[in-house]
Image (cartoon, rainbow, N blue to C red; front, side):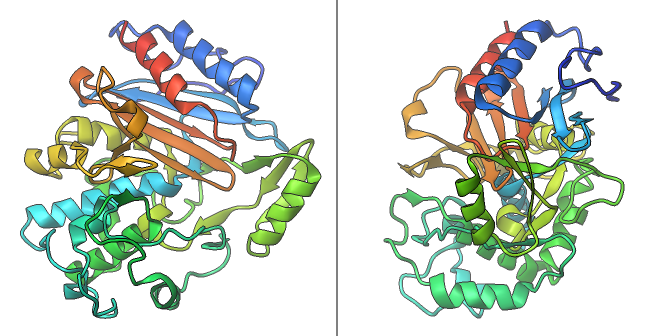
Length: 383
């Protein structure tokens, strides 16, 4: 379904009719929920999409993608995905498992010779459900200006040397780790004999119709500027922590961030728009069948990804999806994933029993109440 809209101003998010169908979506209710969270959390710009497994229902942009240029956010605005990328990485691994090219229960070292020869050896599945016992170092310097080249081999060697050995019991409770997905990407590259980014683009993004998303900025992309809101002392400290060339100018209480990319594609490297994120959500609502009808995963694998079986803190995990422990037993049941970091705060939530998903992308570092936002949107879209 085509997205037809015209840009709207920061002060008038309803300046045009968003994409909507006859599914009974209460657009007024959704807009009220969005504008409330943007106002209370001081979010510059937000893009939103709602989908079922076979069609996009609604997409709209609110506020500004760029404060200096007064450029509005739209459904086509691209954001850094950060950890939403893990859903795509997990999908790639599960596709290889479906094809019999990869054993989820094989030791990591079977695929990555450089991984330490330790006992017990983490398994591929444990990388994906965060039970490999790995550390989760703050990745604030695992980024680089968009104008600089990546050095993935040297980066991986440094990370393995410092953090490769598990810090917690292997196979124990779930402990969120970016490192697990960095290694999962290396497993994909080893199995396919191709760079991870190339395989994912060809085997996941392209067949799912996610043509506006990739591991580099598209030349024609309508890119959101990332912002950190806070007093000058805080943003000065952040500027010192980030690699040189990323911290930009201040606009009032906002520090802008110049375009940058994540080093470590598998755990957080994607750049793309909310509509493509909705296509990813539709693929998983459709039990592995993309919105365009192409099947990427078996039904069994797609359902296994959503099955929350590894309890832990701060999340209980499936494969590529999680849920907070305080949401155990919630009805309607959902799984979700966030993608957060310097300048951007995003989320995808699936309600499988409702055949309904919400994707939200924002250009703020502030941790707003995304659970309430998701719940209010769900109630407005599924009255």
